[in-house]
Length: 357
Image (cartoon, rainbow, N blue to C red; front, side, top):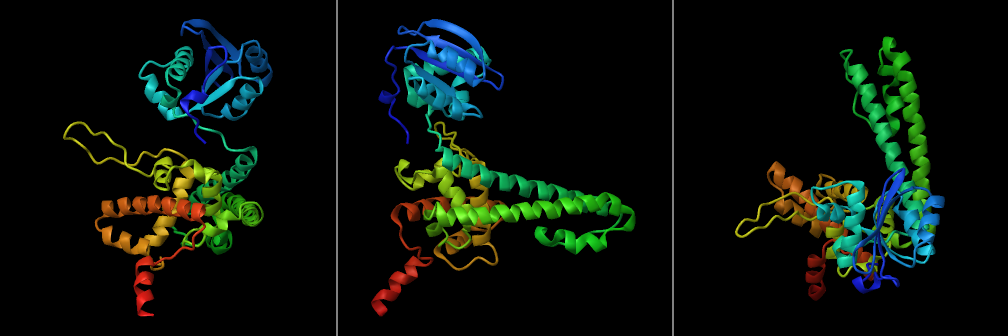
């Protein structure tokens, strides 16, 4: 949950900006008068940072979200400091065109001292949720790898004047194995075996997803009332948001996931721009895929589908409509999660049928 600016205060008046690198961290310490008290470089390791931060009085420590920010933010708080993890996009925007590690650390410290909310502070999810979400992302990595290997097989065969038939990735090795030219089998057979192995690992992770929904995240089952929302999407939605009550309204979820248009309004000019693409890219991808299903040929009838079909027309309009449906899905799923309501695909018609009965 986002903290107010008054909660980002240090007892000593010291403010520490840390530009976290993979090998080294650059520190900038500001005193009570916002004067630079120290600039230093420390190796990015638990031992080195513990030694350096333990020497400081209780301070406000600011860093950007990144690979090391999860464990480092917990270390900072264990040492008695107050930690602010800044939104990386906001930090880059505020830094401007001048950028280097030393200056980045100072910039973080000064903005955190002036107004912490300028950095759009965030809170890392719990260790359990992070581990479960990592498993979901590992599944996605395997799917991407399988797709790359399948495309490689298709490309090899196509270069020899043949085309392999369309088929489900899960059945690809069995369907195309006999169609591969004899001269290519030494090159293609190891790839087909790799595809089969990846499929087995993906299916094993699918079972883990189902088990997590049943045993640890039952709230995800309620989201599957919406056609097109399966265990993977519902679990990823729950794990990514983690706490649904940190949003003031369900509409805020669309903004959080980067499904709203960017704005560059100036005077009378208000150009139409693409979406911000902020937030978790994988969840946004899943919601867009669900939106394709809802608006596609096999999508079941619903208010959301009818709304989308009225808007769809030209190719660009169809793309915008799919994104808009994904945004509405995000809002709907959050609403169902918070309220526990039963999903009604055709609410308007249901309301009309009540008096007649």
